[in-house]
Image (cartoon, rainbow, N blue to C red; front, side):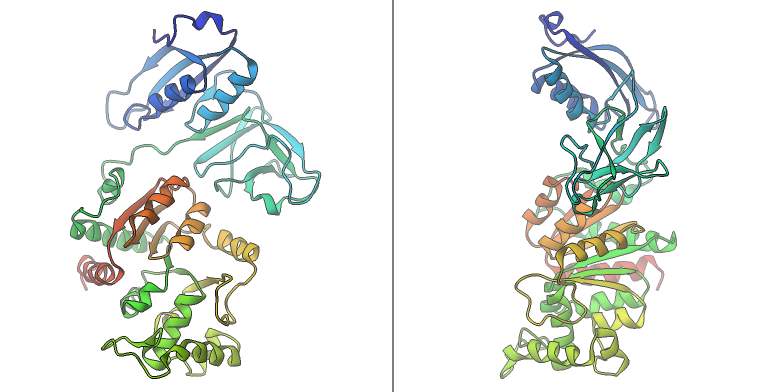
Amino acid sequence: MGDSSPHAAEATHVEEVEVAGHIIDSLILPKVLDTITTGGGTFKIKSIAIGQGRSDPSRALIEVRAATDEALQAILAAISDHGAVPVHSIDCQTEPVGQAGVLPEGFYSSTNQRTEVRLGGQWVEVADQEMDCGVVVGKDDRPRCVPMSEVNVGDKVIVGHAGVRVFPPDRGDAGEHAFAFMNSAVSTEKPKAGQVRQIAELLRDNQAGGGKTLIVGGPAIVHTGSGPLLSELIRGGYVHKLFAGNALATHDIEQAMFGTSLGVHLDDARIAEAGHEHHLRAINRIRRVGSIAAAVDQGLITSGVMHDCVKNNVEFLLAGSIRDDGPLPDVITDVLDAQRQMREAVRDVTFCLMIATTLHSIAVGNLLPAWVKVVCVDINPSTVIKLSDRGSFQTVGLVTDVEPFLRSLVEEVWKTSGQ
């Protein structure tokens, strides 16, 4: 059944693979078959069992053929990202790192999806799942994702796709209605009220379930006068971590000290005299006392997002860029160090809300495993599209301005919380 070519018999290099799970409704099976033919191979579906109920998995046994071993291996590598596993599995192969920060040639490049590797005849789950990393097998035979810059001489790195299997996310449980809108394309014309209500439910449920919510925020939160709305969520216990750059913190502190953002009064939009200096003076004052927390403790900052983060023990991580003024003393100016600290901080994150920041959103999206729910809110639809294009396909996009979104979100959170 299902022979893809009348000349399939001419292809002498053959491998049987199996795909299992929600392979029909998640379109995994057609993706696998399309990848085989696009790669110059042919296939024959030797057997298939389709689940009868919504929760029943399906399973297909596929014979893959290619004209050369190189072509076959390339096809197997490509379809493995969709969860296709050779039936006759062997242990994964490793090679030692010969130069610090350099992976062996032919290293297995990880995805953000749950992955297992075969060691000593047993399938072992890969820890610290992250896309675009190598997989290092430690001395305890525990595999984990490690970025290229972090590998050391002697580390055993998995090479090739043999002995590696990937588990694409299944279609969500029917009860997970709050994320049901994730399957549709990004659009500026969708009704916002229902989506905001569902995001509020996610925030509430994540808090009630003991999860950790990460906010990734851009300076537009302050520029649009939305800072007090984010502060409400922080004080309400709905935010556990904040990732931002120098700009959000700087202009938030500027607002707390001068009532302006970029020199513009947020209450009446008047341009302040010498207002262009305000953010520099704010940075200078914080640098004088040594940190944002010290400024809060000394009463130099008495309101705002950063003040409420300090007062409510919300972990914040500020990553710098080459265009930063100052920067604030809390800003991490070494990009690899910032990435390293962000990677550690996201380990226990269960829900991420990204608001009005393209670069930070993409950076954090690259660090998160596929099972972490992500909502990206931006006035520019290309931000959400870029996130998805880079592999963060679990991202839900909401195209809207920051202020009306946060205002509606706060209202819905209090409603659903019964406050």
